[in-house]
Amino acid sequence: MAKVMGLTGNEAIAYAVKQCNVDVVAAYPITPQTIMVEVLSEYIYNGEMDAEFICVESEHSALSACIGASLAGARVFTATASQGLALMHEMLYIASGLRCPIVMGIANRALSAPLNIHGDHSDMMGSRDCCWIQIYAENPQEAYDWTIQAFKIAEDHRVLLPVSVNIDGFILSHSMERVEVLEDEDVSRFLPPRKPLITIDPTKPVTVGALCLPDYYFEMKFQQIQAMKESCNVIFEVNSEYESISGRKYGFLESYAMDDAEAAIICLGSTAGTAKAVGRELRSKGKKVGVIKPWIYRPFPEEELIRALGDVKAVAVLDRACSFGAPFNALCSDVIATLYRHGKDLRVFNCLYGLGGRDITPADLKAIFEETLEVAKTGKIKEYVKYIGVRE
Amino acid sequence: MLIEIRWHGRGGQGIVTVSRLLAQAALLDGKYVQAFPEFGPERRGAPVTGYTRISNEPIIVHSQIYNPNVVVVVDPTLIGKVNVTAGLVQKGFLIVNSERSPKEIREDLEVLDAKVYTVDAVKIALEILGRPIYNTAMLGALLKAVPVTTMDSLAKVIAERFPGAVGEKNIAVIRRAYEEAYGIE
Image 1 (cartoon, rainbow over the protein chains, first blue to last red):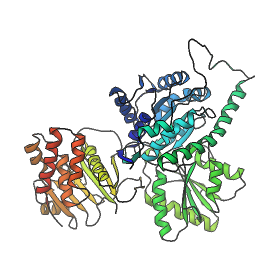
Image 2: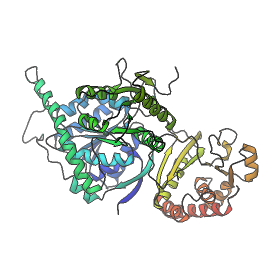
Image 3: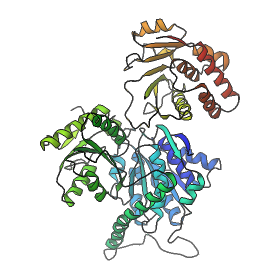
Image 4: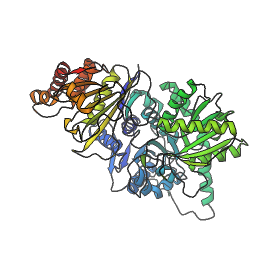
């Protein structure tokens, strides 16, 4: 019988990190991530977790400390949100460039200005090209499960890339839900101590992060491109192994009611749950709708998306971050690029929603489904980018 | 059956705590739950709301609660200042910390179809705890009106959250509030 706990998204990630026998946590608190760090510092202070907690003066320093510890061979965790992630931006590229398998929890939040502490995806999308594997969880259970899997994916020698586990700020970070947790021993068996490929050691000096001019820099980046590609195999293997110990099946994306769907919504994170609930209601009325929720945003699950789309005729892609001046917002651009690359022609429109924490309601999603069904029927798109619930 | 509950109180009165305690108790009953605060900065003394969803099925909706089945007013001074009955479903439950009768509250708030319960939680808290902390009393009143969990589960959760005498006294508060709460349906 699995152990059931009531945990918020923040607490679920912190609990998973404790079970993952992390060696070093360096983090700086910021709403709505703060509790993730508070709980970890309590675990360490209480002796429940044998780790070093490094208090730092900023997020830039937090990730810098993590990079040093990771290079020394430690299993490392950090967490942030919003401005904190923006301040880390420089170090995000250094973490991936130095191939540090750091795991970071992010309670996604809007970026200033104007100041806003609520949930949207502007922070992670603002750093989407930093060569971190990016995972979005729908609820605290998924946040817990993915955090444990994240370390195993990151530390695999075929990958050696950092991983972010994203939860919607407040909507998930502060929502307590039922979470089934694994026994400590099961997590330890699944995730043995890290085996670093190389470590920095004063007795055996090596150089990391050396100057790399036009003669080699591109090759270093090409290795990262390949590692990102290779991570697909590793993610698949880790999901299978995790299913065998947890009974919970993960993959690159979740496909809901897509078998004979004519219209679909594609979205990330907690919104997918509400979309599924609305989809279920519409299905009961005979409307053929489905939902696709990418769990993994980077590497983008191209093959899986094409398979999941099946014979669907129209798709609404929901973005919770704005790519100002771009033809489409980030997730929608990726979907359209994937369709183009795979020679698949179907009608796609983009919905920008929920900026600064504006709630997306079942009624909003119902209207989007209805419009997608209409597009499926007529083949005509009225607006390529819609703004959900905004006052013009 | 999904039950959606909204809690009204002020920052510092344990609104988030009580919304979570209820969810924890329902978890022990084998239910699925969500408990979440009004999102945003916390401000002591300012009106705040908390939310609890309870269901026999997994809860996948993550939008906010607009039409609660149950509203619990922990701080009676909010009545008239905050629209505590906003969005309450037809024939929903309104549970108020008040020395006044359910009938008076119902007429005052003009929710003539609502099932209204009251309990003097302030008096109970002062008598048993010796302090005006009356969030847990409202759990007893809620349980009297709607069987969203059991007294056993509430007692277990309280004892775990507040070990020792504090927990025992709070359980006594809940039991007394359960006995004293009364309503009209």
